[in-house]
Length: 109
Image (cartoon, rainbow, N blue to C red):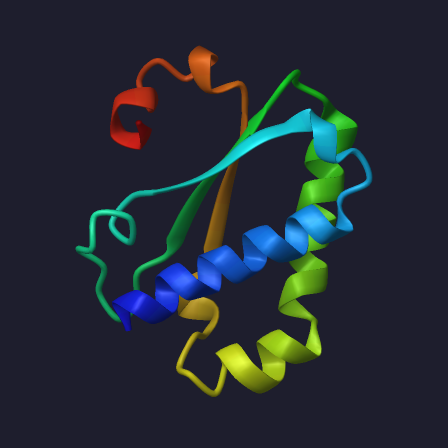
């Protein structure tokens, strides 16, 4: 399951980069939390930090809409669900400028 969660998070990151209008606003997509530390359980969520060049509420809305599109996609429904990825493995996004997240940065980098 651990490898599947890493692959699942990479698939979403790829989907996001393909769909986002302003790719240059995203500096990094960083996996953190239990999945990145290989300590995930069957029901672990996937924590992704979207490191952006500047904070932008429209960009945040667009990213959240793309997450919804991903969860509604045929690939999610016909591939990831069959591999056991379910709503319990929620993708949790944190969007911001990494340097401003001082308390979170040590657990990410």
